[in-house]
Amino acid sequence: MNEQIADYEGYMDPTAGERSSKLNMVDIFLAQQSRLRRIAAGMGLGASDVEDVLQDVSIKALKGPANSQSKEQSTRWLIRVTVNRCLREHRRRRTFKRHAGEILKMRRQGDAASGPTAEKAVQAEELEIVRENLQKLDETLLPPLVLRYFCQLKSNEIAAILDLPASTVRGRLRDARLILAKRLQKRGLEPQ
Amino acid sequence: MKESCDNFAELLVDYADGCLPAEQSARVTDHLTECDHCRTLLESLQKSLELAQVIWQDNLSKTPETIRIPAPARTTQRSWLRYVAAAVLIVSAILIATNMLEKPAKHQPTFAEIEQKITDAGNAAKLLAAADFLGGYANAETIAKQQYRRIVETYPNTPAADKAKTQIE
Ligand SMILES: [Zn+2]
Image (cartoon, rainbow over all chains, first blue to last red):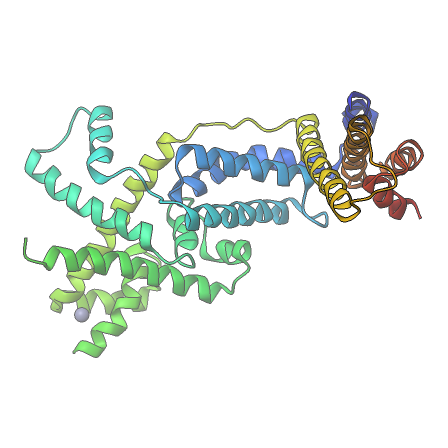
């Protein structure tokens, strides 16, 4: 076993020649790691699932895409792989596990200057509504929403990543935003 | 009135994001001054996004900043272990099946023979996994071919050798 590893390591030695495209993929992965982590967190995965997903994606990066591509294409490929991998977890598990109360508690601990208790109670209820609806959001809507509003990507970039027409992405973003807004609004109108 | 509000709902998202062309933006602003319904919707659009960002940020804060990237060697080792496990299962299944089908067998393999076969199959599978891995690298094809040949020569009666043959032919 060890001699195989030695062969492999010898091959991967940058001094042995030009750096391979696989190594470049790993470099791209490292450069994009915080964004990929943001995507996984935005899709509601728990800490250990985020780590599992990123580990898997790093292995995929090591193996590389089927054909060698430009840096932009490789980056898109990595993001797409991450989104798809997150969707698999999202389908399997309960996502966005931390409830509004806990989120606010953590925020209060991190932020001494907080508002009056009554305001917090309202916020907790609204936060919980949004959390539940993010959890329930259709899987065609969640990735564009996260990429646009948590990763600050433009809709045409998202379209290229998800391999969809830009108009479809814009439509999905609108749908997702309106669903979250209307459900928040609806609950606000319901008698307590 | 209702219908026009429905039309505005779509525009409101872009309006909230500040990415409507000036002309349309002015139209929405005009409508908002006289429509409570759309004003409330706009507020909800803004609020729900802010709350979503709180949730995302909270979830992000729980995740580790960096992950351990499996070293190439570790990845290889892992896939070897998978191949070994698979090979052991396959070989055991074949041996059990042949034992069951041929009850009055001419030659019952001894435990030592079974063990040797499993070890050979495992070793061959490890080499095969390594060769496949190397084969994925441009310029490493020659090394990969050497490995395939070694598998065929050293462990001729293994499933991995059969696969290796297809790679050199
Ligand atoms: Zn209106």
